[in-house]
Structure formats: C-alpha cells, structure tokens
Image (cartoon, rainbow, N blue to C red; front, side, top):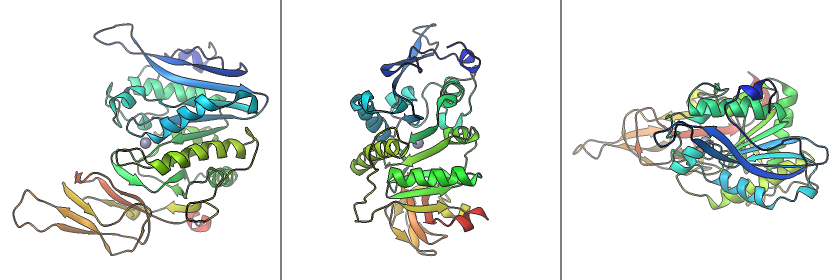
Length: 347
Ligand SMILES: [Zn+2]
C-alpha cells in the first residue's frame, strides 16, 4: 500500500490486489464527526482474481438513489466462481455509501455529487477524497471500467449503456464493441452537459476502456434494468475473455443486438423554462418528433393560468423522459437521441 499515489490517499484498505482468489472487505475512509473524531466510513469491496487476464472495475452506487448497479454488482460479487475466471475483477457495489444509505444522489456528508468530483483531492472533502482514491489507487490497476448508473429520482432512462465520443478511433471502436457485448437495448454515444469531473472522464484520461449505463430511474428498482445489468456485466466479462462463452445480446423485441445511438447537440436536451408541474406526453424509448408536444408545464397554484406547451427541438428516440412531476427552472425534462453515425459524430 506504500507506493506513490497510493500512499497519498487517506483511504485505507486490507485487500491485496495481487493475491489470487476471492477477497472481501471494506475501504476505510476517515470521517471526523461529532460522535467520533477518528471515525471511519466502511465501503464494501470485493476482489476476485485467478490466472492471467485483464482487470475490470465494476462500480455501483456512485449516486445513492440508483439501485440496479448495487443490486447487480452485489449479486455477481456473491456468486462469482473464482476458479472460472481468467483475470481480475474489482467490485465496489456501493462506492458512495453515505449517499446510498441516505437514498440521495448527493453525499449527505459534504453535499457533493461524487460524479462531479473527479479526479478528486486526497485532502479535499469526503467525496473529493473518495474520488481521488478511485482515480489514483484503483484506476492504474484497471483495463476496463463499467460504472453502473440509472437516472435516479430525476429522470427515467431508456435501458442503455453509454460512452463519450472518445477522440482515439481505436478506443472508440473497442468501446462500441464492448457496448454491443454488454447488450442493453440501446448504447448512447454522447458529449454530455457537464462531463469533465465525472468518473468516466477520469477513466478516459488514462486511456482505459470506459462504459457507463442508464438502467432505469424514477426512484424505483427497474425489473428489466436489473436483468439487463446482471447479464451485461457477465457479457462484458465474456467479451474481455475473463469468462468463457459468448455474450447473450438478444433483445426482448426479437432484435439480436444493441441499437447504437448518439446525443450530439445541446438542442437534444429540453429544459424547463420555469418552475412548475411537468406533465410529460411520452415514456423513455418512445419515438418523438421535432415540433410535437413533449408535455405541459402547469402552474396549478394560479387560477386560470394556461400551462406552457413544451415541444421537442429534434426528432428521435427519448433517451431520458421526465421523472418527478415538480420541476425547477433549468431542469432537464427530456433528452432525445438519434441513430449513431460515426461520420456525423466526428464533425
Ligand atoms: Zn448516476
């Protein structure tokens, strides 16, 4: 544990990442609090290693109100047979454990979004310290990272993997291939709204293969999202050669494969122009058209005030549909995606 970047982290751990077999334990992240100046927060970690092969990192619970990742990764961590493996899997099913136990997107410790704290700071706030540990200690060990998210309480996502349009065409090709192997109904290549400080961006800066997911949302456990997530994690292990066998990518609608999509422009995002009660007209994964009604923004506190009609700026498929009824000015209420086109994406 005493080598360069590792030593600088304040997070302690007992796992020996070089040891073969299955190890379980907890990261011990220091947190001074009223009940304990020397207190720690324990974060579950499982490492399974056997033979020679790549290292894969599975993370869930980066946001505490996203349930499918913690469920799928915990189940895999309990059931995986080390003898069947060629390589190493590092699993953190509930990275942001204070937020997971608080059922919130943001950490209750410092009010931060862990996924906006990368690459982190070992001497920063709790979330920044945690981000630094993942970036400086774990990522140097890793060949591929799958960060399992959903849309939490804020949106409802079409079941999908996602990736950035990374500049290196070879990494981009391999990531698209890994997404196809994961086998969600959709894979979304996107440019994002606020991406520089995400885990994904840290992974990409290190030239490591990075996939995210959006496997549900709306503040509940998505039945199909858990199924697609569990199958996808195993599929990726097969694709990378850690497990034997071929990925099963069959889709519920009879399609044999993932549909690759992209979110290229800012006008793919529809923002609420005022605080109000949003009545959506479509569900995630539905086809929508430019100029058609996306929903009504109601002001039920005002007698006789007409709702604002909100219309789509683009045609496509809904990647994200509105979650809660009550929205703030500037909240995203819809995200539209279009079929992926590498030539168009590069422009
Ligand atoms: Zn998330």
